[in-house]
Image (cartoon, rainbow, N blue to C red):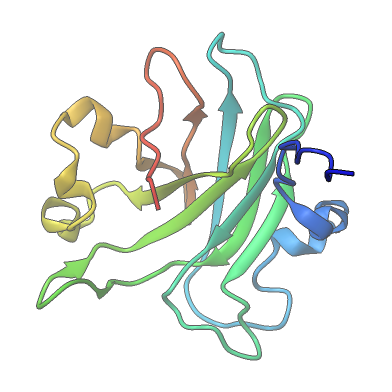
Length: 177
């Protein structure tokens, strides 16, 4: 008797780590006593119709400052009923790029949510950073309007916000990595 045909199934977008979304401390990258310039990063995720995505897991990670016992450089949180997310972290500095190029200070963001079989990855850059003009990733984005979808705006002392649109008008630029 022949083996039954294999049937493709949807991948798990978050795998066995969904429970981490239920731990609010995962959004506080300073929880182990990291010291340095602390910032709050917030945003709102909306779908193509402009409606809030209320069931997303948002992950951030950063290469600067480097991982240490007091700084995990990785966090995760869920969006709330309005599609908002919030993290406490350290302000990143520049990191090496290809060759002699420096990457502007940034935070990598991945969004996992209903309807997404793969996470969507983007970056958060900080407005008025001099290295934004020569950042190797930002330089690949030709349209100034598209580049602007990756630039966080200051919203107060040590606070930054970046809203993310999953599709449609003003869609955030996502990276194919």
